[in-house]
Length: 260
Image (cartoon, rainbow, N blue to C red; front, side, top):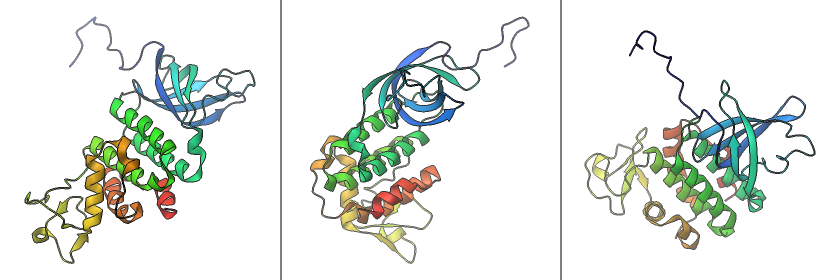
C-alpha cells in the first residue's frame, strides 16, 4: 500500500530501544583488538548478534560471561544496521557439566537445531525453552541416557517445525500402524505394508516403540526410561526427518552417535 502524501515513512520492525531478555550464548568472534561479536539465542527477541565492546580487556564486565552455552540475562541496545550493542550480561547459569565430550557434542547439536528454528530478532519462545530445558537434561542425565535424551529432543524439535511424521498411522491411508511400519525412499512419512514401495524398507518394531515412547513421555522422565534398544539403533530414522526438514546434516550428531 502506498503511503499518503506527507505521511511519515513506515519504520522498520524490530526493537527500537535497549531491552533485556533471557539469552544463551551461541558463538563469538574477535572484533578489532579488544571487542567481540556475540550471537545469542534469546527468548523474547529471537537470534541476536551484538557487539560486546572491550570484551577482551581484563577488567571487562563481559569476562567469563559470554562463553558458549552460558545462560544470561542480556541487555541489547537498539539495532544499528543489523548489529546491536551488547550493553550488559548477567550470568544466570554456567553449564560446566556440558564440557564432557559426549555431552558437549549433544549440546552443540541441540544448539544448531534451535538456531535453525529461530530467525533474527523474531521471538520463538518454545524453541528457546526447548534449548534451555534440553541443556539442563543433557547436563544432568546419566551417561547411559544421553542417546535417548538426544532422540527425544530431536522429536520435540521436529514437532515445533511441524515436520514430525505421524508415528501411529499410515501417511497414505490413515490405517493404524500397530507394531509394523515401513518407509518409502524420498518420503518422510511412515506407511503400512500395502503402501510400502518395493523393496520394502521396514521400520523395526522396537525402533517404532522407542520413538513413540519418547514422543509421549515428558522430557524430564526420559532419563528414567529403560528402552529395549540402544539409541544408535533408532537414530537413523530421525536423522532422515531432520535432514528433510532442515536441509542440512549435523556433524555434531554424527560424532555423537559414532561414539554411542
